[in-house]
Image (cartoon, rainbow, N blue to C red; front, side):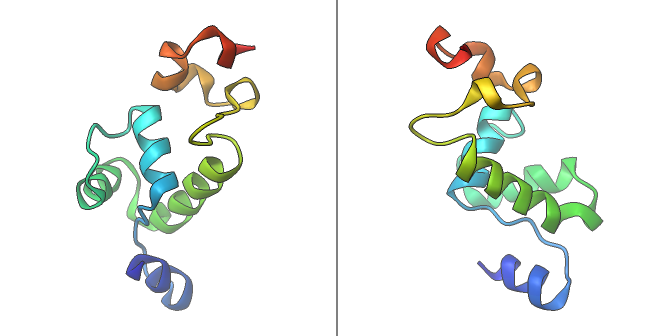
Length: 95
């Protein structure tokens, strides 16, 4: 997205909302929205502007490697205590 280019190439802060950021943000309870633009605005309210790009990349990596769409690895995640998805998840994810 444009925010990736702005953040990486020009050092300008921006929230990147891809499928991973959308999923992780929703699961953690950071947003109730599904529209990427609304999610971007929600996250901008929660995260200091200077950290927008780094925060986005952290959520992308978290979504790719731990908080997968089909088989989330909740049992390995340090965010479990704060995660709305984990609190409601079936016991099979809590092992």
